[in-house]
Image (cartoon, rainbow, N blue to C red; front, side, top):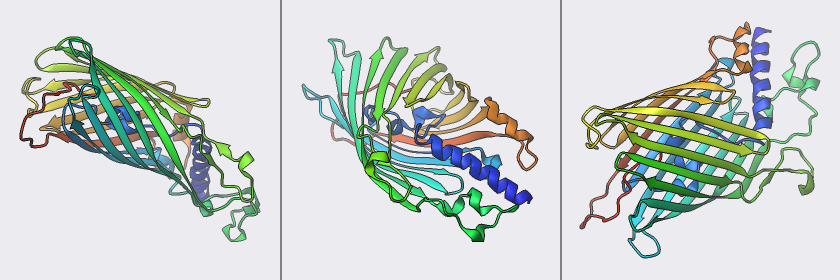
Length: 353
Protein backbone atom coordinates (compact mmCIF):
# COMPACT_ATOMS: atom_id res chain seq x y z
CA UNK A 1 0.00 0.00 0.00
CA UNK A 2 2.89 2.32 0.79
CA UNK A 3 4.34 1.81 -2.68
CA UNK A 4 0.93 2.52 -4.22
CA UNK A 5 0.72 5.78 -2.25
CA UNK A 6 4.13 6.79 -3.53
CA UNK A 7 3.08 6.10 -7.08
CA UNK A 8 -0.17 8.01 -6.67
CA UNK A 9 1.68 10.99 -5.22
CA UNK A 10 4.23 11.02 -8.01
CA UNK A 11 1.67 10.59 -10.78
CA UNK A 12 -0.57 13.27 -9.27
CA UNK A 13 2.31 15.72 -9.46
CA UNK A 14 3.01 14.57 -13.00
CA UNK A 15 -0.59 15.27 -13.99
CA UNK A 16 -0.32 18.72 -12.47
CA UNK A 17 2.81 19.24 -14.54
CA UNK A 18 1.09 17.84 -17.63
CA UNK A 19 -1.64 20.44 -17.22
CA UNK A 20 0.79 23.25 -16.40
CA UNK A 21 3.05 22.57 -19.35
CA UNK A 22 0.24 23.65 -21.66
CA UNK A 23 0.58 27.11 -20.08
CA UNK A 24 4.29 27.44 -19.32
CA UNK A 25 7.24 25.90 -21.17
CA UNK A 26 10.49 24.72 -19.64
CA UNK A 27 12.70 26.95 -17.52
CA UNK A 28 16.23 26.89 -16.12
CA UNK A 29 17.52 28.65 -13.03
CA UNK A 30 20.79 29.17 -14.95
CA UNK A 31 18.81 30.72 -17.79
CA UNK A 32 21.82 32.67 -19.12
CA UNK A 33 23.64 29.34 -19.68
CA UNK A 34 21.02 28.21 -22.22
CA UNK A 35 20.75 31.26 -24.52
CA UNK A 36 18.91 29.62 -27.43
CA UNK A 37 15.98 28.55 -25.23
CA UNK A 38 15.62 32.21 -24.18
CA UNK A 39 15.93 34.23 -27.35
CA UNK A 40 17.07 33.41 -30.91
CA UNK A 41 18.79 36.81 -31.07
CA UNK A 42 21.30 35.59 -28.46
CA UNK A 43 22.66 33.10 -31.00
CA UNK A 44 26.31 34.02 -31.48
CA UNK A 45 26.16 37.01 -29.13
CA UNK A 46 29.66 36.46 -27.76
CA UNK A 47 33.18 37.64 -28.34
CA UNK A 48 34.40 34.13 -29.22
CA UNK A 49 33.91 32.45 -32.60
CA UNK A 50 31.94 29.45 -31.33
CA UNK A 51 30.34 27.90 -28.24
CA UNK A 52 29.05 24.47 -27.28
CA UNK A 53 27.12 23.80 -24.11
CA UNK A 54 24.96 21.42 -22.12
CA UNK A 55 22.65 21.97 -19.15
CA UNK A 56 20.74 19.46 -17.01
CA UNK A 57 17.96 20.10 -14.47
CA UNK A 58 16.30 17.66 -12.05
CA UNK A 59 13.35 18.96 -10.04
CA UNK A 60 11.44 17.36 -7.13
CA UNK A 61 13.68 14.28 -7.10
CA UNK A 62 12.43 13.31 -3.63
CA UNK A 63 8.80 12.76 -4.70
CA UNK A 64 9.79 9.73 -6.83
CA UNK A 65 8.50 11.20 -10.13
CA UNK A 66 10.88 14.09 -10.87
CA UNK A 67 10.89 16.59 -13.70
CA UNK A 68 14.06 16.23 -15.77
CA UNK A 69 15.18 18.69 -18.43
CA UNK A 70 18.36 18.76 -20.49
CA UNK A 71 19.58 20.84 -23.42
CA UNK A 72 22.55 20.49 -25.75
CA UNK A 73 23.38 23.47 -27.92
CA UNK A 74 26.02 25.16 -30.01
CA UNK A 75 26.47 28.33 -32.05
CA UNK A 76 29.04 29.94 -34.34
CA UNK A 77 29.78 33.41 -35.66
CA UNK A 78 30.56 34.35 -39.24
CA UNK A 79 32.07 37.83 -39.27
CA UNK A 80 31.24 39.80 -42.43
CA UNK A 81 32.16 43.40 -41.57
CA UNK A 82 29.73 44.60 -44.26
CA UNK A 83 27.90 47.90 -44.31
CA UNK A 84 24.50 46.35 -43.58
CA UNK A 85 25.57 43.55 -41.24
CA UNK A 86 28.71 43.10 -39.17
CA UNK A 87 28.16 39.47 -38.30
CA UNK A 88 25.76 36.56 -38.83
CA UNK A 89 25.42 33.57 -36.54
CA UNK A 90 23.97 30.08 -36.67
CA UNK A 91 22.99 27.76 -33.85
CA UNK A 92 21.48 24.37 -33.06
CA UNK A 93 19.60 23.30 -29.92
CA UNK A 94 18.21 19.98 -28.73
CA UNK A 95 16.09 19.86 -25.56
CA UNK A 96 14.41 16.94 -23.80
CA UNK A 97 11.85 17.76 -21.09
CA UNK A 98 10.51 14.76 -19.16
CA UNK A 99 7.73 14.67 -16.55
CA UNK A 100 6.70 11.84 -14.25
CA UNK A 101 9.26 9.09 -15.00
CA UNK A 102 8.72 9.25 -18.74
CA UNK A 103 4.92 9.58 -18.70
CA UNK A 104 5.11 12.82 -20.67
CA UNK A 105 8.01 14.08 -22.80
CA UNK A 106 8.63 17.24 -24.80
CA UNK A 107 11.48 17.19 -27.31
CA UNK A 108 12.70 20.17 -29.31
CA UNK A 109 15.11 20.32 -32.26
CA UNK A 110 15.64 23.96 -33.20
CA UNK A 111 17.86 25.76 -35.71
CA UNK A 112 18.67 29.43 -35.06
CA UNK A 113 20.00 32.26 -37.16
CA UNK A 114 20.86 35.82 -36.17
CA UNK A 115 22.29 38.98 -37.71
CA UNK A 116 24.23 41.55 -35.66
CA UNK A 117 25.20 45.16 -36.26
CA UNK A 118 27.10 47.90 -34.44
CA UNK A 119 25.30 51.25 -34.34
CA UNK A 120 26.50 54.78 -33.76
CA UNK A 121 29.74 56.56 -34.54
CA UNK A 122 31.42 55.15 -31.44
CA UNK A 123 30.01 51.64 -32.13
CA UNK A 124 28.89 51.30 -28.53
CA UNK A 125 25.46 49.94 -29.43
CA UNK A 126 25.33 46.34 -30.61
CA UNK A 127 21.97 44.97 -31.81
CA UNK A 128 20.93 41.49 -32.88
CA UNK A 129 17.82 40.04 -34.49
CA UNK A 130 17.19 36.32 -34.64
CA UNK A 131 14.82 33.67 -35.95
CA UNK A 132 14.45 30.08 -34.83
CA UNK A 133 12.54 27.21 -36.40
CA UNK A 134 12.28 23.55 -35.65
CA UNK A 135 10.27 20.50 -34.77
CA UNK A 136 8.51 19.92 -31.44
CA UNK A 137 7.59 16.37 -30.42
CA UNK A 138 5.30 15.57 -27.49
CA UNK A 139 5.05 11.97 -26.28
CA UNK A 140 2.49 10.56 -23.84
CA UNK A 141 2.63 7.10 -22.23
CA UNK A 142 -0.86 6.70 -20.77
CA UNK A 143 0.11 3.31 -19.27
CA UNK A 144 1.92 5.25 -16.56
CA UNK A 145 -1.26 7.09 -15.50
CA UNK A 146 -3.83 5.98 -12.91
CA UNK A 147 -7.58 6.60 -13.30
CA UNK A 148 -10.60 6.37 -11.00
CA UNK A 149 -12.11 3.34 -12.74
CA UNK A 150 -8.97 1.30 -11.95
CA UNK A 151 -9.73 1.37 -8.21
CA UNK A 152 -12.07 -0.85 -6.21
CA UNK A 153 -10.80 -0.35 -2.66
CA UNK A 154 -7.37 -1.07 -4.07
CA UNK A 155 -5.39 -0.35 -7.22
CA UNK A 156 -5.93 -3.00 -9.91
CA UNK A 157 -3.91 -2.10 -13.04
CA UNK A 158 -5.07 -5.24 -14.87
CA UNK A 159 -8.52 -3.67 -15.18
CA UNK A 160 -7.28 -1.01 -17.54
CA UNK A 161 -9.18 2.23 -17.99
CA UNK A 162 -12.05 3.44 -20.15
CA UNK A 163 -10.64 6.98 -20.34
CA UNK A 164 -10.60 8.30 -23.91
CA UNK A 165 -6.87 9.01 -23.90
CA UNK A 166 -4.38 7.94 -26.54
CA UNK A 167 -0.77 6.90 -26.42
CA UNK A 168 1.29 8.54 -29.09
CA UNK A 169 3.07 11.62 -30.33
CA UNK A 170 2.10 15.11 -31.34
CA UNK A 171 4.60 16.55 -33.81
CA UNK A 172 4.47 20.10 -35.09
CA UNK A 173 6.65 22.86 -36.52
CA UNK A 174 7.20 26.03 -34.56
CA UNK A 175 8.86 29.39 -35.09
CA UNK A 176 10.43 31.74 -32.53
CA UNK A 177 11.88 35.24 -32.95
CA UNK A 178 13.76 37.75 -30.85
CA UNK A 179 15.72 40.97 -30.50
CA UNK A 180 18.71 41.76 -28.29
CA UNK A 181 20.70 44.90 -27.50
CA UNK A 182 24.04 45.48 -25.84
CA UNK A 183 25.55 48.81 -24.83
CA UNK A 184 29.16 49.42 -23.83
CA UNK A 185 28.97 52.26 -21.32
CA UNK A 186 32.61 52.15 -20.30
CA UNK A 187 35.45 49.67 -20.24
CA UNK A 188 34.08 48.49 -16.90
CA UNK A 189 30.32 48.45 -17.54
CA UNK A 190 28.25 46.71 -20.22
CA UNK A 191 24.46 46.29 -20.14
CA UNK A 192 22.21 44.00 -22.18
CA UNK A 193 18.50 43.55 -22.80
CA UNK A 194 16.47 41.21 -24.95
CA UNK A 195 13.00 39.99 -25.86
CA UNK A 196 12.18 36.53 -27.19
CA UNK A 197 8.82 35.46 -28.62
CA UNK A 198 8.07 31.73 -28.78
CA UNK A 199 5.28 29.57 -30.27
CA UNK A 200 4.51 32.08 -33.02
CA UNK A 201 2.59 29.50 -35.07
CA UNK A 202 0.11 28.82 -32.22
CA UNK A 203 0.47 25.05 -32.59
CA UNK A 204 -2.44 22.82 -31.51
CA UNK A 205 -2.17 19.59 -29.52
CA UNK A 206 -4.41 17.01 -27.84
CA UNK A 207 -4.25 13.44 -26.50
CA UNK A 208 -7.99 12.78 -26.56
CA UNK A 209 -9.07 10.27 -29.18
CA UNK A 210 -11.55 11.26 -31.86
CA UNK A 211 -11.77 15.01 -31.34
CA UNK A 212 -11.74 17.65 -34.05
CA UNK A 213 -9.22 20.40 -34.67
CA UNK A 214 -11.62 23.01 -33.30
CA UNK A 215 -11.41 21.69 -29.72
CA UNK A 216 -7.68 20.98 -29.58
CA UNK A 217 -5.52 23.02 -27.23
CA UNK A 218 -3.88 26.01 -28.93
CA UNK A 219 -0.52 26.94 -27.41
CA UNK A 220 -0.09 30.57 -26.42
CA UNK A 221 2.81 32.80 -27.38
CA UNK A 222 5.49 32.80 -24.72
CA UNK A 223 7.30 36.11 -24.17
CA UNK A 224 10.68 36.17 -22.41
CA UNK A 225 12.24 39.48 -21.37
CA UNK A 226 15.83 39.54 -20.08
CA UNK A 227 18.30 42.14 -18.88
CA UNK A 228 21.79 41.91 -17.48
CA UNK A 229 25.07 43.67 -16.93
CA UNK A 230 28.77 43.09 -16.48
CA UNK A 231 30.42 45.49 -14.05
CA UNK A 232 34.12 45.31 -13.22
CA UNK A 233 34.39 46.30 -9.56
CA UNK A 234 38.15 45.84 -9.49
CA UNK A 235 40.90 43.99 -11.26
CA UNK A 236 39.88 40.80 -9.49
CA UNK A 237 36.10 41.11 -9.01
CA UNK A 238 33.15 41.52 -11.42
CA UNK A 239 29.40 41.64 -10.81
CA UNK A 240 27.08 39.85 -13.24
CA UNK A 241 23.45 40.74 -12.36
CA UNK A 242 20.60 39.32 -14.47
CA UNK A 243 16.80 39.50 -14.59
CA UNK A 244 14.28 37.32 -16.43
CA UNK A 245 10.53 37.73 -16.82
CA UNK A 246 8.57 35.16 -18.84
CA UNK A 247 4.84 34.98 -19.49
CA UNK A 248 2.66 32.50 -21.33
CA UNK A 249 -1.13 32.66 -21.01
CA UNK A 250 -1.73 33.15 -17.27
CA UNK A 251 1.57 31.61 -16.14
CA UNK A 252 4.58 33.81 -15.36
CA UNK A 253 8.15 33.39 -14.16
CA UNK A 254 10.29 36.12 -12.59
CA UNK A 255 13.96 35.62 -11.67
CA UNK A 256 16.52 38.10 -10.45
CA UNK A 257 19.90 38.01 -8.77
CA UNK A 258 23.60 38.26 -9.45
CA UNK A 259 26.70 36.19 -9.89
CA UNK A 260 30.07 37.41 -8.63
CA UNK A 261 33.21 36.51 -10.57
CA UNK A 262 36.50 36.38 -8.67
CA UNK A 263 39.25 36.58 -11.30
CA UNK A 264 42.17 34.70 -9.78
CA UNK A 265 44.68 36.05 -12.29
CA UNK A 266 43.12 39.42 -13.06
CA UNK A 267 40.12 40.22 -15.24
CA UNK A 268 42.16 40.94 -18.37
CA UNK A 269 43.49 37.39 -18.66
CA UNK A 270 40.98 35.14 -20.45
CA UNK A 271 43.05 32.02 -19.80
CA UNK A 272 43.27 32.62 -16.06
CA UNK A 273 40.83 30.97 -13.68
CA UNK A 274 37.72 32.63 -12.25
CA UNK A 275 35.50 31.47 -9.39
CA UNK A 276 31.76 32.17 -9.78
CA UNK A 277 29.39 32.50 -6.82
CA UNK A 278 25.79 33.69 -7.06
CA UNK A 279 22.40 34.06 -5.49
CA UNK A 280 19.04 34.38 -7.29
CA UNK A 281 15.37 34.33 -6.36
CA UNK A 282 12.42 33.04 -8.38
CA UNK A 283 9.32 34.90 -7.24
CA UNK A 284 6.97 32.81 -5.09
CA UNK A 285 8.95 29.67 -5.84
CA UNK A 286 12.60 29.26 -4.85
CA UNK A 287 15.83 30.74 -3.51
CA UNK A 288 18.74 29.70 -5.72
CA UNK A 289 22.41 29.31 -4.83
CA UNK A 290 25.07 28.95 -7.51
CA UNK A 291 28.77 28.13 -7.71
CA UNK A 292 30.96 27.73 -10.77
CA UNK A 293 34.43 27.82 -12.27
CA UNK A 294 35.82 29.28 -15.50
CA UNK A 295 39.19 28.46 -17.06
CA UNK A 296 40.57 28.81 -20.61
CA UNK A 297 37.17 29.03 -22.28
CA UNK A 298 35.57 26.32 -20.14
CA UNK A 299 32.84 27.13 -17.66
CA UNK A 300 31.11 24.73 -15.27
CA UNK A 301 28.32 25.76 -12.89
CA UNK A 302 26.14 24.03 -10.30
CA UNK A 303 22.99 25.48 -8.74
CA UNK A 304 20.37 24.37 -6.24
CA UNK A 305 16.80 25.65 -5.90
CA UNK A 306 15.51 25.64 -2.32
CA UNK A 307 11.71 25.65 -2.56
CA UNK A 308 10.01 28.54 -0.76
CA UNK A 309 6.47 27.99 -2.10
CA UNK A 310 3.73 25.99 -0.38
CA UNK A 311 4.98 22.85 -2.15
CA UNK A 312 7.76 22.62 0.44
CA UNK A 313 5.17 21.23 2.89
CA UNK A 314 5.24 17.94 1.00
CA UNK A 315 8.37 17.23 3.07
CA UNK A 316 5.96 16.20 5.83
CA UNK A 317 4.54 13.31 3.79
CA UNK A 318 5.57 9.97 5.39
CA UNK A 319 6.52 8.39 2.05
CA UNK A 320 9.04 11.03 1.03
CA UNK A 321 12.44 9.39 1.29
CA UNK A 322 14.53 12.54 0.94
CA UNK A 323 13.25 15.29 3.23
CA UNK A 324 14.16 18.09 0.83
CA UNK A 325 12.14 19.34 -2.11
CA UNK A 326 13.95 21.43 -4.67
CA UNK A 327 15.89 21.25 -7.90
CA UNK A 328 19.50 21.12 -8.99
CA UNK A 329 21.16 22.08 -12.24
CA UNK A 330 24.56 21.50 -13.78
CA UNK A 331 25.86 23.28 -16.89
CA UNK A 332 29.04 23.05 -18.94
CA UNK A 333 30.08 25.49 -21.69
CA UNK A 334 33.15 25.81 -23.89
CA UNK A 335 33.75 28.92 -26.01
CA UNK A 336 36.74 29.35 -28.29
CA UNK A 337 38.33 30.98 -31.31
CA UNK A 338 39.01 29.51 -34.73
CA UNK A 339 42.41 29.78 -36.38
CA UNK A 340 42.31 32.55 -38.96
CA UNK A 341 44.74 33.69 -41.63
CA UNK A 342 43.96 37.28 -40.63
CA UNK A 343 42.63 38.46 -37.29
CA UNK A 344 39.02 39.64 -37.25
CA UNK A 345 38.39 43.35 -36.75
CA UNK A 346 35.12 42.65 -34.96
CA UNK A 347 35.00 41.87 -31.27
CA UNK A 348 32.09 41.61 -28.88
CA UNK A 349 33.79 42.25 -25.53
CA UNK A 350 31.25 40.86 -23.06
CA UNK A 351 29.08 37.87 -22.32
CA UNK A 352 25.27 37.97 -22.37
CA UNK A 353 24.83 37.94 -18.61
